Amino acid sequence: MDYKIIFSDLDGTLLTSKNDVSDLTISEINKIKDRIPLILVSARMPKSMTYLQDRLGIRKEPIICYNGALVMAGNNVISSVTISMPVIESLYGIAVKNNIRIGLYFEDEWYVEETSERIEKEIFNTKAKPVFKKTNQVIEDWKEEGKSAHKIMCMGTEQDTDRIFPVLNEVFGKELNIYRSNATLIEIADKKVSKVSGIETILKKFYPIALEDAVAFGDNYNDIEMIKAVGHGVAMGNAREELKEVANATILHHKEDGVAKYVKHLF
Image 1 (cartoon, rainbow, N blue to C red):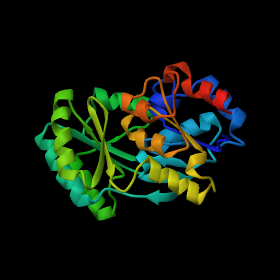
Image 2 (image 1 turned 180 degrees about the horizontal axis):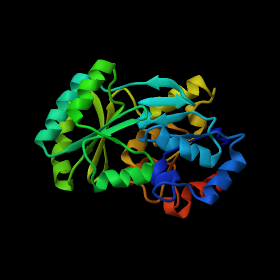
Image 3 (image 1 turned 90 degrees about the vertical axis):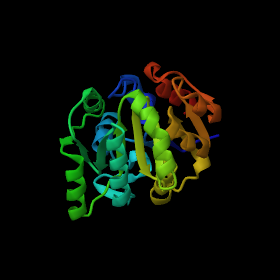
Image 4 (image 1 turned 180 degrees about the vertical axis):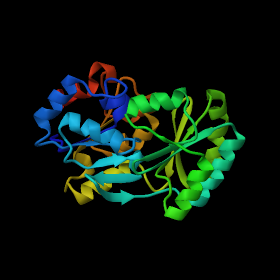
């Protein structure tokens, strides 16, 4: 099968470290990028993806941000779906009662109330800095500005996160996609969006290519739908077992240049 386009997750997948791609990855992508487009698909904000596009020499390609809630091409917004403000307010109330801190994201804006070890890790990993502001003030400002959130991140101890995760699913499961990205983080977007919806937007707008002609790489729960939807879904060696079960192939760990070595094999 001659696949025609690649969609790749970043963290735990294309990135060999916490915040960068390897020289081997850059080299292998440079060999194919003029005939096989590489589209980055992530829960990250735009500016935490575009520096990686620059490293890979693929800045001309669109990107899928916030697990599909925002699709960008350069500075142009191609598709944008945000969480409704009443839902944000309700979720914030539940978070406060459960000792959970939240981060709010809109386009390239990121707001948290205070720094923490988790926030410092996020700053290092994504090369983006948040604005420190009380969440209720961000909500009031956004109401005046007509903004809302592309993504909400819930942060807490593993015990607090364990406790609130089923509560959020019970209360908001019909309206929101709620992903446990690790033991202490929950990422949330509108139910209407996913990495697959972002891929479909890009294929419709930019590339007349069928889903079955696409390859996708991923490692986490929010990649499962994408891996199942494309013609050739690939799980990293470090991927969740649930993702490996639905993938067409399982490759090396992301720290072992799994994507680069498989791209060399495939193309």
